[in-house]
Image (cartoon, rainbow, N blue to C red; front, side, top):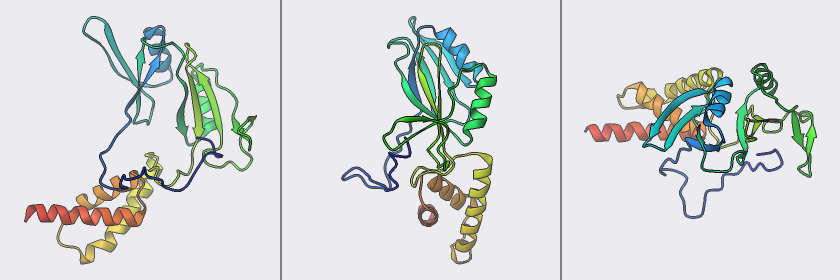
Length: 226
């Protein structure tokens, strides 16, 4: 997503509520390759974790790898045109550091670029360095193209980056919010409120919404125990 395509408004599908919906977690995407072992070596060389490599029946080989810090994995497949996967995004907090690491691992990474008002790619980072505004790209041996995108502040509703610094701030925020709730709350274990609050914030809820969700969670848990 480029900075010229961003909308900060939440726009749920017609008739679909914002809350209490079933989670649909994107956990794996297929990457079409011509040689599974070559692709496995390439992605493993990037430091991606090998989750699985086994046969299902006599003909299907399941090979799954996961990029560092990503909740979504890739499956290497040979049933589609090799190299036909284009434009998968890898979000990074520091695009220059990400490029240096990939280059050190032998990957041919493009220079940093951004998009102008006509959505044309322009060499160099965006002058104002906005979140979602700077990119770089690389391809695997089959030509599948990956896009690095620098994100420092996420859009509303997009949740949080679960790095140590962000989690530290989130736990401190949770502690503060729970401290406001606890003096007038019924007897409960703090962990239940904390867990509900953190999950709500990770899903993109505001601090006020997350505090309300956590309070409702405790109320429901206590009612179930009564």
